[in-house]
Length: 303
Ligand code: ADP
Image (cartoon, rainbow, N blue to C red; front, side, top):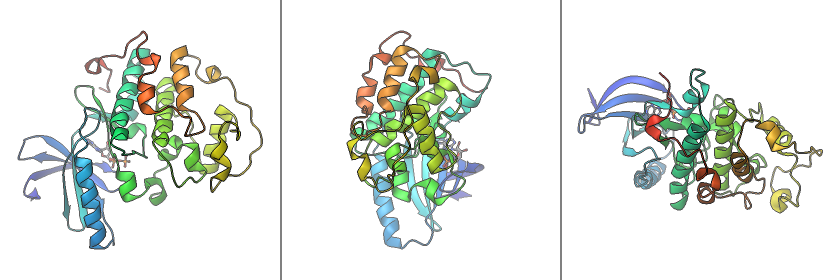
């Protein structure tokens, strides 16, 4: 039985934020694909049309470091999104104790992450839900960002589903302070958390609640002051905190190179307006200094 007269359904790959994801064969191309079934719930049909129109825009986002949305169609009250099939993800790589990541491997993974982000930011699309299991890895070692634009389309996932706790760990301070207007800086902060996680091989700021998340950020970088971040005091959920001094960043990342730490500190800037952009992060000397990023086909991957 074919779905949409085109896809042969295979096994379920997992339950995601927005619904079930299953493997399928595209009979038109012979390619393996992943189909994400998104429950549209009790929304009015007009909303679905809006979603579909926006989905069309996402289909135009084509880049080597962005997972390609090849098709989208509504079926039985669900929206089906068809993506290229990917072998594994960065979370599996980070968690696999049999994998050794050299400084060049880490540089390659974070460079591909930033390249994918840079492409989308140039098109004025934010990701908003960056985390290692949203960074998928294909057979040729290419890392591709998944779920681009979905957070904005279908709502911030962790507010809708309680099992989605991980997204909090990658959340920028302005979001934790309740910022309603925010920009590409939220993706830079999340990318910095992923960079840190690659260096440490464990989540860097694993907050257990939103308050604890802020506490973990303050413990790592010191409490922000209005001289560092003038707009902070105007944010809806801003409250004054007891002063915490910043430990030297070096003490948190004893194994990192100086250039890696320099880039990391620019990405972890409190004030989103002062935070380095993705484009400038890619131009940082970390990426042109030795060791150069590993060729993606040579990157270590889970067995
Ligand atoms: P989450 O919302 O928790 O990030 P997803 O909805 O992205 O989860 O995905 C659910 C499951 O489907 C995960 O196990 C993920 O690895 C898998 N998956 C998602 N997209 C793809 C893809 N393009 N190729 C292969 N597996 C995928």
